[in-house]
Image 1 (cartoon, rainbow, N blue to C red):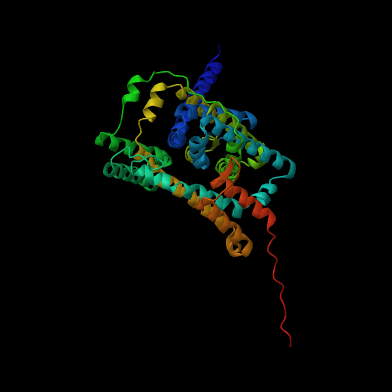
Image 2 (tube, helix red, strand yellow; image 1 turned 60 degrees about the vertical axis):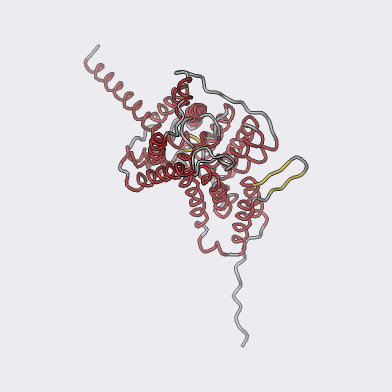
Length: 425
């Protein structure tokens, strides 16, 4: 073998080695948020890791591995998953999440047919903003109950109140400090940092139960759960997909700016939406939370200048490999309730603020009667707990307010410009 060939092989191996390490780093950045959703909703963290990896690989297949993004658990679906699991069970809830992925697919074909502007007409900020606000605000009681050491519904006290409040405050404080003062990569993992700080405090108080670790196998197949058709669950969850669909557009815009490439042109929103939707349906098929593009990973891409999509391939592979760790899944199950409650206080409030930011894009026109009616009715319907049903079917909460928002936007006439009338002489 020639010297030049040997040098090329060495550079290739070093390049692959660097991509593998950067892939692990990207997963580390996403890890806190990725496992937070299954822990909050009662789903399996191992399955969430597996579906995040598999979903990312599917997204790369659809977009021809041209976009450096990582897909993982979506926060927008936390409330409907919690309600769905309690009302119909995990398999039925998965049928609703599977259908939500198909909404993305339909939107992708709509964009392919009518162009990207159709999304702005059907889902303008005055529709999406209030719905996102409802997602965050409707979860506020869950956050406060868990921060006080109770179950999400507040029915059972799991950790003594005084200790729970201290643990939650430590989790909040650590997350805030890392968000505001963290440097470099550490600033991208505030949730993970907050969880670790709260966990150590919980350990000091002696409220961490390690019994699951002693019986956990080192290697275990993730406990997959397959969907069971449930029309009520499907109709309840289906409308929720509009919020993360709009968030997806923002994420693609962000990564386009970071990578200095127009991903709206190639592979195009029609393909990125399709990839996101298929990844979400794939996740639901195996019993995982819906997938969405992760902003934290976009920040890591900007910081490290790691624009090669192959890095996300290795991040996905790392996620799949770790999903078979029985020890890791058992360790995550030992995280006490107030740790997660503290993180939720910030997280759910942040979701509501994103909704406010989206609504503010309407500008001065927000106070015009048409926009004011849409926003106000949606907020009251969503937060007030209105339910609509017939017979055994019922829809309420986020799903209902999303439907109301879309219908009002389509039905209410556009504001007419007031004609200028000259006063009579």
